Length: 84
Image (tube, rainbow, N blue to C red; front, top):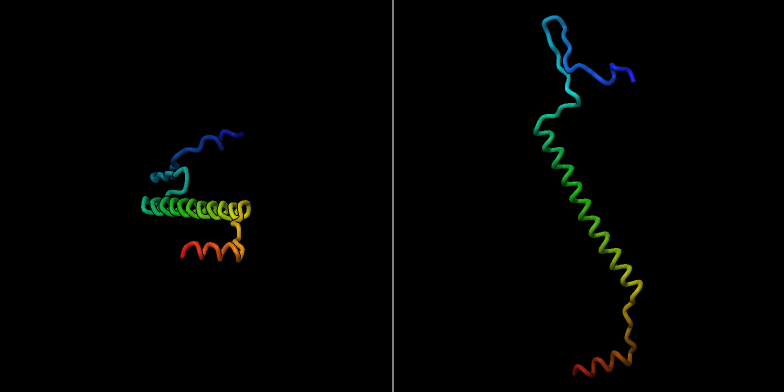
């Protein structure tokens, strides 16, 4: 790797003018805060959506593996007369 790609000077001088370079694209503090808030909102929304999907899958698996027994007409009549 050439030396010029490893070390870049932080400033360039053109006569009496000095131009400094930032290592990355600089954003204002407000823009950085909005970007961070958006990222945290998306992470939180994804987490909640993941929890809802997980509980939905658990519910479907539970109903599939352990179905509710259906009462026959005779059992329903017995249950209704037992509560009278």
